[in-house]
Length: 200
Image (cartoon, rainbow, N blue to C red; front, side):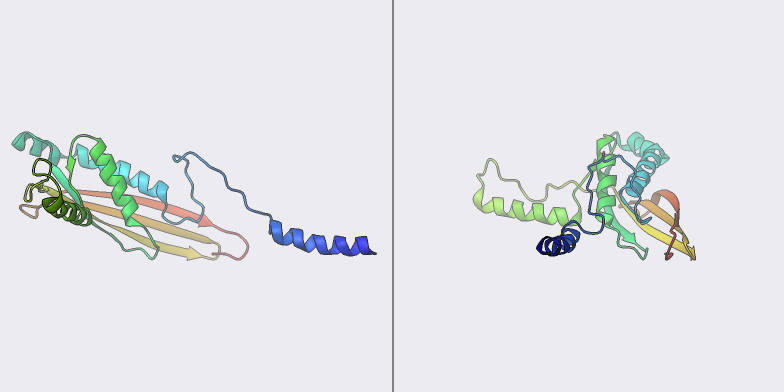
């Protein structure tokens, strides 16, 4: 009887410890396509970045600038607005664009507004504490020639256990001297999410 009672007690404890089916964690290559929820994810960010950067670098504005100035243009990424009803970390998307464009060696990137403020604080600190030979002077910053801005929008259509999500990413490159839009890029992604059982 005692052994039976121990068995009865052990079963619920094991169920609590190991949960309903347990949890499995696997490390995968960062290039692996993962789309668990159907929402915007890192794969979407990479796909959009690749197309946008290719279009931007192949567009006429870059060749025109190089011909006129004889050097790479200086670019800064401005605001990327999330107009979807999802939580999207636009900072990840922005970093993807900055990294890919910078690594192309065809444009020069300058620090963002937030990054510049931290650098300026350090430069101000150097005026008091760094040696005259090593401190960096004010008003030596490189001004950007162009600002890249963008929006991420989505349209959702659903019925019973199926949902269609349509994403549209629009990016523009603005000449900071004239406010002229010198390049316009657009990427569309459409996903169909099907779920059984209780629906979406």
